[in-house]
Image (cartoon, rainbow, N blue to C red; front, side, top):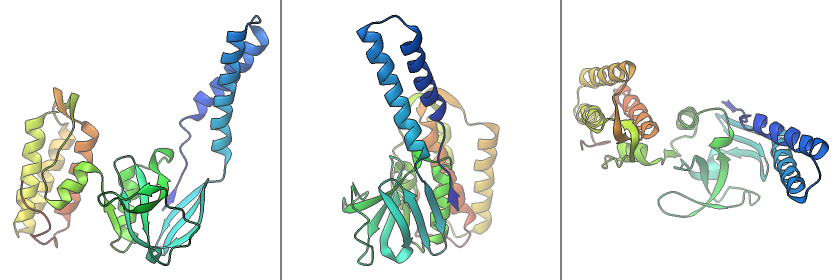
Length: 244
């Protein structure tokens, strides 16, 4: 899987540069206007320069291919003890003894706080965290953990602590779907699991109820994605998750 750099900030950067130049050329003289124009040009220029810097990130059967500012190289899976995606959208690697020293540890691994390598900031790529997590799960040989809050809690069997805010998904509706899925996972009946998955997907297709105050929508979507994936795995043993 080849990831692609996000270009979402480029229009704003271009606007900053063009607007700053227009102010310098057309506006009357004035120190404040001069400072604002120069500041806009510098900010926009920095974003444009960063967008032009070499970037490559590939998730392959043998490992990771990384080429970004501050980190470049081909890393085999065995060069990391573990990999995790945290709540901030960062892909972190826990280096093994085989990991080259050029991979500097600048972050802390979720859970135990050990020194880790920040391999990628997923806010800078077009692909979604769920797509990246699926590829890492497939290729990393069991080293990858999705440590984003609700997803991690769902997989461990712990209570899910969704954030509550304005215009979120209805609490009772979400709790019912989570309970339905967990009860199906706890049984040893593949047909029941698939039926629960179908009911959850039908509810999502119809549109989950949005309340004035409810669970944060993106957290719920990630948790339900993970739950449906677990329900699809008909070989899942009953001790992998426990009902809430």
